[in-house]
Amino acid sequence: MLFQNARIENAEKTADFRVEDGKFLAFAEKLRPLEGEETVDLAGKLVLPPFIESHVHLDTCLTAGDPVWNMSGTLFEGIECWAKRKDKLSPEDIRQRVRQAVRLYARNGVQFIRSHVDVTDPKLTAMETMLELREELRDVMTIQIVAFPQEGILSYPNGKELLEEAVKMGADCVGAIPHYEFTREYSVESLNFALELAAENDRLVDVHCDEIDDEASRGLETVAARALELGLFDKVTASHTTAMHSYNNAYVLRLMRLLKMSRINFVCNPLVNTHLQGRIDTYPRRRGVTRVKELTAEGLNVSFGHDDIFDPWYPMGSGSLRDVVFLGLHVTQMMGYEEIMNSYKFITHNAARTLHLGESYGLEAGRPASFIVLDAENYYDALNRNAPVLASYKAGKLLSRTKPAEAELLF
Ligand code: 17E
Ligand code: FE2
Image (cartoon, rainbow, N blue to C red):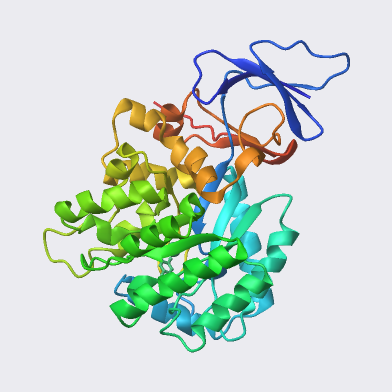
């Protein structure tokens, strides 16, 4: 099958590419159709590698208000609301919500998801069901699962055993939540435990790290130090790191050296953290978003995530990563021309590095023919006009298509 006149990753000139047996066969400025070959004219539209959701909680999605709404808008009330909903979890309830969320993502060009799954549940219902869904949905959505101890590793009954069990069951990544542990000592011990568990079992790590406005929350330095010492390096990701917003600059200068040595990844969740953070401030009120511009400038890998779709922590969400990038650029003040043009990397290449997708991702001959087509010529334009994802192909198979809305002006 031959795709013609694609504008690949903001290229000025259009190009053609051929797909065979679910893989990219060749890219060139012009490719001649073979006899009887099906052709698709992309008419100069933007082609990107698929969008990647590098941070979401699929097990909690679509539960906002059930049984109670988060009225303070804090992370901590969100955790309380979720604890009440957790009592009602059943495999069927999880299956229905996750399938629905995956469909929302799919129509927005997302083909890969890293989902945190709460393992602070003696029955591990969500983990067991999510592992089944990972297989069920494999052809439409590549799902990576983090064993996420929402209520703590040392501060929740049998927290360590539950995390170990989730890894045995087949979780891809190990999580932790240092800022929620009862004490600073517990937070350090929980991180040592989580990273050692990952090293012993050859898993990735993704920590909910310092998601708090407390400038004394310093889980990040422990995560980075252990990533370095255990040789885990870029297998480790620090998500949120919102306390870094509030750290003093002298401390960040010292910390940055260790971060660069550790080579860990970062995930920033602009929609959710602008909403959850700064809640105990009067004015000025902190934005509560980690230092994306500075981390990027130092060569560290940062991706953007949605974090939630309509759940106790975030009462909105349509599965569109465009919204995430749009707000992300505003709140991090990354609004220069090149910054806007290249911002799709936060939800494509940078996220692919975090998820360790390797050669299963990217617009290159020999790789799976997974790509999306946007109704724009470049990403600046796509982002600004909220251009729809016209088509999403995964390993050569068309997964979704969208017809652009037509507006009529009657004046
Ligand atoms: N749990 C958590 O600890 N932090 C979050 N941002 C969400 C769930 C969404
Ligand atoms: Fe999260």
